[in-house]
Amino acid sequence: MTIETLAIPTDEQIRSLHERYAPTEEAFELVYTHCRIVCALAEQLLDRCRSPLNADLVRAGSLLHDIGVYRLYGAAGQLDHDNYIRHGVLGHALLRDLGFPERISRFCSRHTGVGLTRDDVLRQCLPLPVGDYTADTGEEQMVMYADKFHSKTTPPSFVSAKSYVASVRRFGADKVARFEEMVERFGVPDLAQLAHRYQQPLT
Image 1 (cartoon, rainbow, N blue to C red):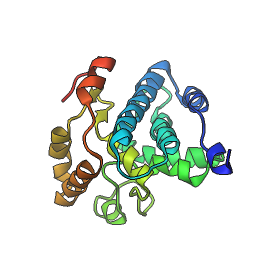
Image 2: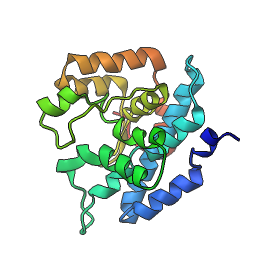
Image 3: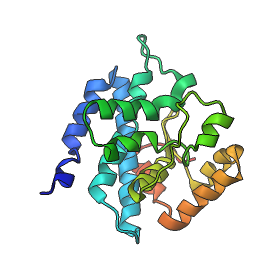
Image 4: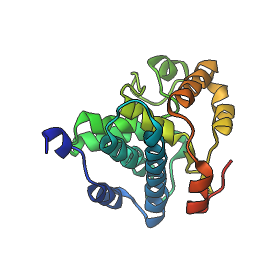
């Protein structure tokens, strides 16, 4: 094995991290199940992807991308929705502080929306350090894209491409165009199959 391969955490190591940082069983079930679903979506898309991507890196990124959400739960077990957009940078910092390489930690901060630019942060006055949070590598783009097809709403649900376009349109035509570029590049996953498996609605 190469050093690069060894730097990618296993499924068991990732689950242990979720169990360690989840403040409640309910939070663990919500976040870890979502991450598993995003992983399943990404693996579907990888099977059809013409670009050579590191499947192990995509899997680890999918399973870790939302670990920062746990840092937004208060002492009473309530999620801080007002600061939810910070979960990516919180996850990035958490993994970095644990000694994970940057290429793993970046999955956390690079998956929000279809990518947050420096201009987005400034124009929307987002509670984030001013910077660029767009997915650069093919693996980051795959995880960010797969994430768009599932939501941790109450109840959690699968999101069709049409529904996502409708929701992202309020952030500008450039965001719609970005998503549609990814649809063209990666295709659309079989949401009905996964919705049936997880017994969650498809919107």
